Image (cartoon, rainbow, N blue to C red; front, side, top):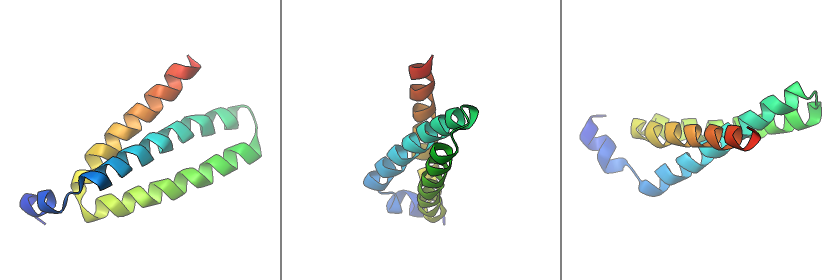
Length: 88
């Protein structure tokens, strides 16, 4: 796919969903890390499995159009930032 095809097939709603999904994924990853450190196996396992489900949805999005990596990275940054700031 060339850049024109990527731009033409880029859907802002899908980009928003990828952004939100990865915001949630990285927030979950931070909670997952905290649960592991606190030795809470059920919480860590549950958050980990939900996190991987959302990651798979993101992978399916950006495999079809690499431009979705941009909202994915931004959502990831925001999710981590918000959780770390909250626990600071």
